[in-house]
Amino acid sequence: MAYMAYSDSNVMEQTRTKIATPKSYYVVYLNDNKTTFEFVIESLVSIFNHSYESAQEVAKTVHESGSAVVEKGLLKSIAETKCAIVMSNAERYGYPLKAIAKQE
Image (cartoon, rainbow, N blue to C red):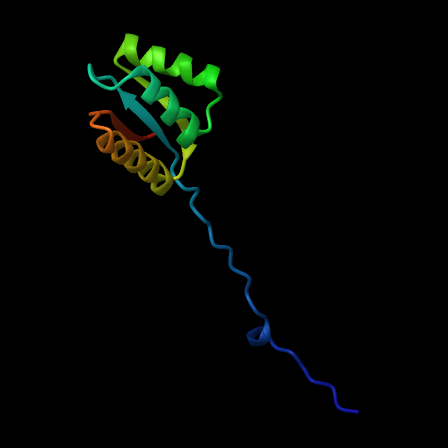
């Protein structure tokens, strides 16, 4: 019976690759004087899954403060996609509502 001898050159090194955590983004609505309160609420419910009550509070903050964070902790692509959907829907109804994605 033959035995195989192992030398140091046969030992495999294990390497660890550090994977970067994706940066987190949030979406902000910007107030304007034309977009209706109802449209803002509906977009928060349908696009960002807010409850009706939560959407009312956020819409009130947007109106009174000029802007409000509507969702946090998103990947960049998802935040940008949601902004595009909001603004596309707003444009379809003739509203100038703006949503922007910002890095946390």
